[in-house]
Image (cartoon, rainbow, N blue to C red; front, side):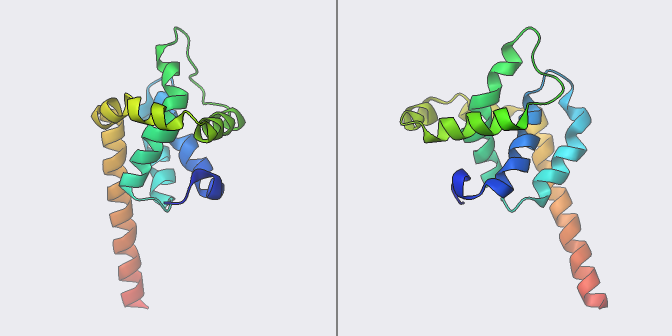
Amino acid sequence: MKHALDDLDHRRPVWEALSDLFLDTDTSLSRSWRIGILAASPYSIEELQQILIDEVYPVCRSNLWQIAGEWAGFDLQWLECRILRRLRSPLRRIFHTLSLGRLTVPLSSEWRHTKEGVLWRRARDYARDVVQSVQA
């Protein structure tokens, strides 16, 4: 997988979709939108989870702890600046090793549903493309 700095055009929509998991609202309501964005990305499920854990989780997790956290969506410029600043940090390796996201993200039921949806959407789109190529 390319480094985020070398792949911003693909990363931005993925960051936005994954940051949705950290809003102070019922994130299942935007699951279909999130699945569509992530399924259209060039990243594998494993790479999406890595982006979630290493790039989005560290920046957005504190929103879930706030009394009145962000609920309408993170400012995309703020999100990108925070993620890139963290990725450039010389302390990144330490933060990476100590990240609780490695333990908590895979257990998140909304992330599990999102992953299943991405896999289903990609399988459906692949089958549709195969049928169309056979018919052509």
